[in-house]
Length: 200
Image (tube, rainbow, N blue to C red; front, top):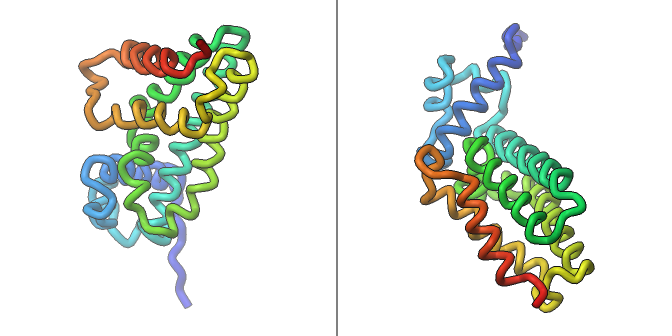
């Protein structure tokens, strides 16, 4: 029996396929993008994708996992940068980090906004634990602020996180980072959110 061998430049091939797929899923939509489209964009034969991924679903899973990794790192950077500051500055740092992740790594992070909810159940089931882990970081941040007496204890952390995520994530649908200033957007979202949830 003859089996297909992995190309010598396997890592660069995998990276190219993943980058092309992430961009196409974001621009065209997951359902509207075929493996043949991805192969054409990567400059390879359609069958060559199977050297790296066993399905379009597994390709999307890898893209979404990378997106979560980027967002988790952005959260950790914001946490270090804002350590020891007040609630307003901590929220602003984290909002800025989340938005930067969305706009600087859009093909990977923004697919969580555009592709996750319409993805096959197998993809959602594989990614939900990672998404929950990231969301828990934010809930933990809000709980810290409540314990410090800076955030209204009457505001449920889970709902507060959903409200803030709605404002940040929906921005990928209307905000043009090539024309606008992401820092200014972060200021507006953080200030509006903090005005509503801070302890009075």
